[in-house]
Image (cartoon, rainbow, N blue to C red; front, side, top):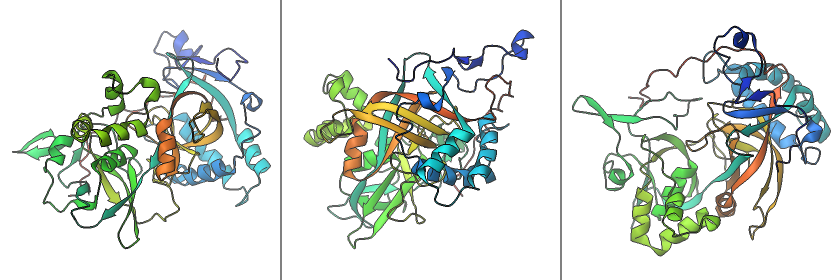
Length: 417
């Protein structure tokens, strides 16, 4: 049973207002605030663990998001009501002390927002996964030990979707020109067979092809060079081919039981079965390109789609078509946080600062857990239900009709050539 106890009837069903002037006029209802979801108002007192969570890290992350919100634009036109309202909230956040106390931070969120429980129509709760930033050893030149390349974005890559906050989109098709016509970009197998070799696109070389595979899934990687320097790489485009979860393939083939599926289980299978593992990875035709993130320190988290360093256990990836970057989301779930995988409460205020091609739906989130192998093991265990309370600015009226956003802009060549 969901932990957020209902206190009033849902404001929205399937994201549509129960009553509106447009509906009475017989015309199409306004677009939903949260599509394909039942939405219900809550009080902060109804959020389990709200008073026990220290929101100062979340507030710091929110204020960083405000830099993008106050001086930027929404991903769609006209801007969504939440985005417009967040601009005003961000001005208020800027008047807070540089280092507010816990009570002051909590009071800010309670004053500026109202929590709305968001539940998908096809499930009783939302769904959570985890991601992290891997760290591996590597070399700036190919050697016998380090022979697997990580590539920068090729100059002939043409992405269908426009960039977001200066970061190439992770959805949509990708093309290259061949004999004057656009054709789909090379898939994983073609790239691994050398389609990009000899073009000077190698950023770094690492030892294990499986590390390259998982770095692409996470969208970032830390590479420790032989001289001790740390090279920070971040997502910089994709090949437009479909993403296939290889864990699902192992479950469907009866190789790994569903209840034991994790990133560690996938790694173990690939290590124990090199040839089959190579073929398994190629089932996922998607391929990711990287750039060197010179602006990041060793202590910064990976950069998310909002263009900001992520904060462990405070930054989440969401469906950007539904949620506005910078939106606070309180998550209540039982997750395998203990070293042995025992379930523990995860009741945290998080900030939507990233997205992912597999993050689809109104109550779907990927929690960023930091960098390194320990964060990786933890993130790889999480495939669990959870309750979502989206904190919506008080100026937003879910009953008020709002204009539909314009369709996405035309395909954009972001190759830089």
